[in-house]
Image 1: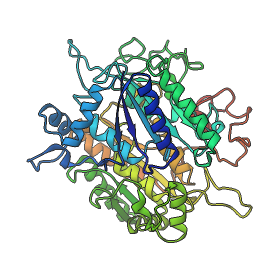
Image 2 (image 1 turned 180 degrees about the vertical axis):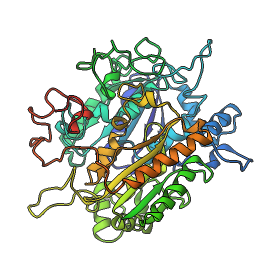
Image 3 (image 1 turned 135 degrees about the vertical axis):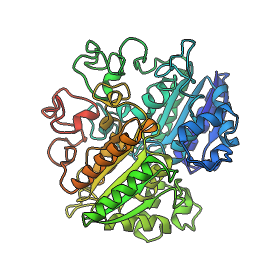
Image 4 (image 1 turned 30 degrees about the vertical axis):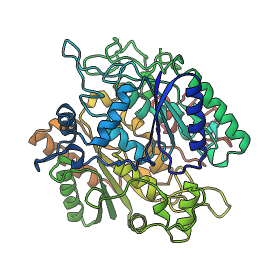
Amino acid sequence: MNILWIFAHPETRSLNASLMADGLRALEESGHRTRVSDLYAMDWKPTVDAGDFRRESTDRLFVGAEQEHGYREGKLSDDILAEQEKIAWADAIVFHFPLWWFGPPAILKGWFDRVLVQGFAFGVKDDQGGVRRYGDGGLAGKRALVVTSVGARESSFGPRGIHGQVEEVLFPLLHGTFWYTGMAALPPLVVYGADRATAQAADEAAAQLRERLRTLPTATPIPYRHERGGAYDEDLVLRPDVARGRTGVGAHAEGAPGAG
Amino acid sequence: MNILWIFAHPETRSLNASLMADGLRALEESGHRTRVSDLYAMDWKPTVDAGDFRRESTDRLFVGAEQEHGYREGKLSDDILAEQEKIAWADAIVFHFPLWWFGPPAILKGWFDRVLVQGFAFGVKDDQGGVRRYGDGGLAGKRALVVTSVGARESSFGPRGIHGQVEEVLFPLLHGTFWYTGMAALPPLVVYGADRATAQAADEAAAQLRERLRTLPTATPIPYRHERGGAYDEDLVLRPDVARGRTGVGAHAEGAPGAG
């Protein structure tokens, strides 16, 4: 497979940097091709602004429309185009970052904000003019794996842990970004207690990561529901007989506890 | 009250900019004092890096520890110190942004990443050495209101809507950031269909915002559970008799459907 590794950590001597080096080596030894976007090393610009669009007009900026226009006209800035080319090349993407405020660091959030534009990643239509979304879209057929480190203990991110069950906390990324654009979201690999990691804990994390990378092509994704698979009505609401009585983000995966 | 308005939109002629101007006027007419951090206008730096710390060492950077050290030693960069001073001044904070990829734009994510450091916003201890967190912390006593615009229809963010119930999608912000640092999280104001807003819809949004600002000092916050209110055990897991049988992010608010 072609595997793109998006990395968002400021320190080249961190546990995460060492995990990435180890992971890339494992992928290459298995015969995969790899490319890396090391966002800090690239000095990636996180902020969407008028400079993204080689724009001559000073009219009011409608961000979504301008992104789509820029994409169609080939006028997006070179750093955005380079990332889109890597995504198009990739069969799978690894997103690797420390969890800050229960989400990706700003430099990675800005990668999503700037690169995954309408017309490229979403808002693409099928032959009948239907919008392809949630399980389909511009990135359909690709797989996405989150690798993230947290300071907290595993129990606190469990089904009833105080921080919220980790896949539900990551719902904006796993469902709202990956699945929305058509990518299969794999269960995230979370490295717990990262700030206090001993050498032994680091070795264990590396072994967990290698196993996840070994199964990257075959692992079963989170079974989110397809927008046009029959579960949703015209208002994009779950039909009454689907996940009966359930509400909230947990209702959008099949087979979740009580989700029917 | 002293009210800080954090604004993250790149276009001064946007619906959001007009809503902010209207909201600030309403607050001042009611006798409140206001300050604004217009992140785009300030050219706010979103990325956490070694430049945040007036750091002489080139040792390995441990972000959390370095942030705390920088705070205690007064060595954080001036832009961070200025925001912390505004927060300390404020009784309530309005976070106003377009929802991009189901979260705040990178420029605002970076405000959280850089400003809410350990020792200031969290990781503060009480007299017995216990860590104050979730319902308590460095920002205890303050109120936080999200005002956000989305392109989608309201139904799609409802309890069973495809994008996920909006308060659960915003859980990393409402619970993981506001409540974690001690701030009371008010129910967010979501402006739907923002890209297609007619003049009438814009007027309605402005009226909704004014009503939310009128009740800012008195509105009932989301009833998230206090970490040390008896609901959680030593592993920070909900005790069996609390929200019996519930899992996921929805279990952490009292009185949620089925949350007991």
